[in-house]
Length: 383
Image 1 (spheres, rainbow, N blue to C red):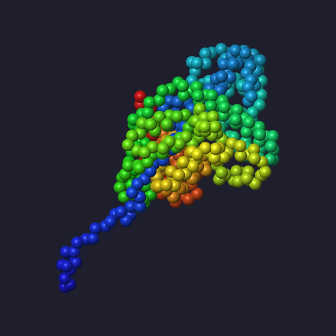
Image 2: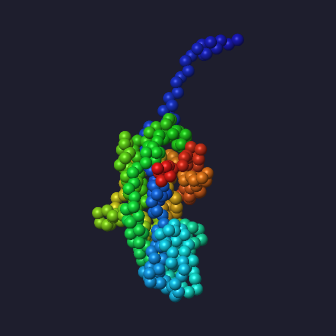
Image 3: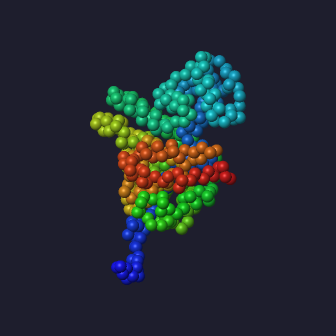
């Protein structure tokens, strides 16, 4: 019999686990979308804005039986019973239904000066929600087919009018609230990066984020208030879509338009000799200030995990989200999904995230599965 005694008594060499541990420090990029503001009780969605716009129209119709602005004119030829009620007793969606009911009646004359506004109203009527930027790009796409400069300029002008109306609405809306950052949500911002949430062989053990960058897609400054309350971490704050008090001279104003340069129709725009097609393409607005460069410097410097709070990950931000998600330094994408009465949008959000990936293997490796994710804290429901 061979003598294995010597072999059995040898010490087992210790494995250096750091060989498999690619990164010692990992940053966190927090993506903030409109659902974040909604979670705090602010009515800042495009749908909220249009419902408020319809209320202003109805109040004017109550006074004068007519309404007119740059986008629409309405004349009521009879006094409608629906206009006699106190609109303040109704919620926004009931008001919107009253608005739709009235403008569809026989004794009402309506002139849509804006095909853009008409498309928005029809979208809400059919789907109960609207992505104004997507509607804009659809109309721009149609106008581009005939390279009709007048129609392209008209669509651009109508977007600018709506942007200014949205800005005024949001400025009034934020005055109604005094937001105090909610500790449970701050805890989600600063939680550790779990090894099982990251791509294989990137981190060996759970670690705290090294630097936290808040990328705010909203026009409000609620996310900024949260950044001020995060202690113990280096913090960056990037208002990528501008700010409500921006003047486009010292502070970037609202970046409002479309941002999917991967769309085949956008690629066709580049082959057309018409600069008006690019007037409201987001990438060109980003070049006016250094916010986008700050983002690139952050994601290209070190490995990072993405947290998503209330962002729909829609196509209107596709170019930027693709740049983030497919960056070689991105090792994890964790979705803090919306949950209500047993229903949630985790799966729908993964569909949206997937549209920003060319590499589906990257998608599967980076997106954290639902069992490791959690709903975003809703401060409005917990206070």
